[in-house]
Amino acid sequence: MGVGSGDRDEATAAGRDRTATGFFGRLFPLPVVGASMSDSDVHVAALCGSLRAESHTRTALEAVLDAAAGAGTTTELLDLRTYELPIFDADRDREDAGDAELLAERVRAADTIILGSPMYHGSYASPLKTALDYCGFDEFADTTVGLLAVSGGAFPVTALEHMRSVCRALNAWVIPHEAAVPNASAALEDGEFVDPALEKRVRTLGRRAVQYARIEPDPDSFESDQNVGAQGK
Image (cartoon, rainbow, N blue to C red):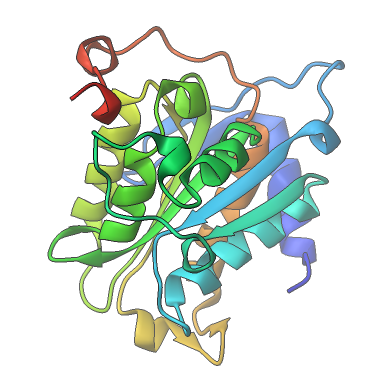
């Protein structure tokens, strides 16, 4: 999937007005990029919480990463199908839990993490929860995070809210712009978006992932201050 002129036009416009629109229409300031910052130094990784072979979540994340790559970054898809991750057990060291340490290393190496998940029973999927349980402040504190959720039915707002809550507890900095793909079977056909407006919103997340990669993080949240982490339970 290439980067169209519409992508470049929107990026130019965003650079002029330095604002971004959140999900409910609120305007947020975009970070001011200094001369010392280079998009080519930014690494964006997407964590796919779906294990399906023909995953709509994976397809949407690939569009996000393609847009980020079009902005000049390096990208990586962390596909949980390829990692051996047993259910988290606090009595077991991460080094003894299959590929958990390898996954944590890849997360730590990223400047921005995109969390992508299907919505199951009103929340995000258990493979992503397991992956996050193996991570902690070392992987997420002061890291920029983007959120994407996919559902077979209505808008997956609760999945986005739950992922945002976890990120707040990990003291991550969540991008105001979030992306969702409701009614995924109708929204995607043969791996392509049917609605250009929806595709634009999803790809915008990739560009925001680059723009916000080096933003100064907020002070520690109350949730993160009280969070002892799964490892400490």
